[in-house]
Image 1 (spheres, rainbow, N blue to C red):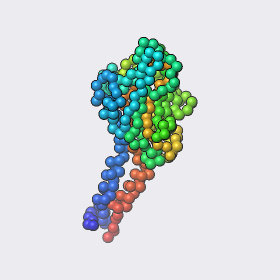
Image 2: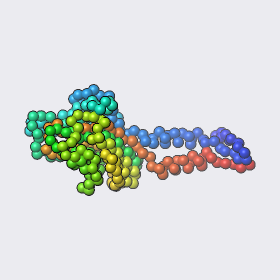
Image 3: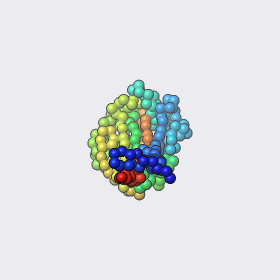
Image 4: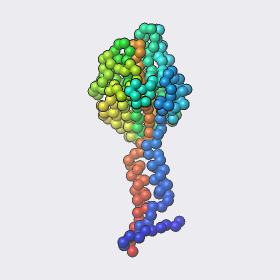
Amino acid sequence: MTTRTHTSGSANWLLIPPVALVALSLFAGTANAALVQVDFDSLSAGAVTATTLDGVTTGGSWTLNSLTGGSVSLVHAIENDGGGSGEKALSSKFHGSSNPTNLAISMTSTLDFTNAIDVDVTGAQFEFEVAQSKGTGFARPVKYSFLNSSGTEIFYFRVNDGNLYVNSSANQGSVGGGGNTGLATWDSTSLLVWSASVEIDTAGNVMWGFGGQNGATTIASTADIKTFQSNIDPDQWVGQGTYLNYFGATAVPEPSGLMLLLSGVIGLGLLRRRR
């Protein structure tokens, strides 16, 4: 193999070999690579099906619950942005002539990832924006969960009366939206829209943020993540449910992996030969 040197002063520096450049390029290509992405904005407003959502989703597929109770049913639609920014949202609301009763806590929608994310193999970051939709009564609790390949819940955010709960019954603080509040129609500029993020490393350490609150917890380092699920609590009022206007998951490389690669590049490319 032919190598080239650059002379500067009294030292000759060996230029970075092509193989190191290729390795660095490949690492850069996988760093923060998109695993799951949903483009709600490309859809037209109106009723939507799981098949339609699948068409604008990379790395996952959808299930929409047709939950019914009494004279009501759960209706899924794409709503335009009343705030004028053009950020459309998936709404899942109860429609009907009377309020549903005695419904068990149920999911409104699930996004099943094509490939389960193995926590002990790669770190991952999830980002999404959600809100409660409000009918004629109090905004009922909502819950956003991550499930493993067996369907077991391993991490969740739950909002009840404007207070946030993360993987436990401990109140993490107010995020707004308590009592008789919520969005009657989708508005991305509203203070009642919650931005959420979850970052998990290969040791199972979790850094989370939701609606201005943030904290840390842990999950089993051997866990995998296969599904994102939106849930509603029992006895929703007509018109109530959830909004989801963005969801994305990306791979996050471990710092140790980056340092290992860089040390190899430095060892190969910055060899100095003194005269």
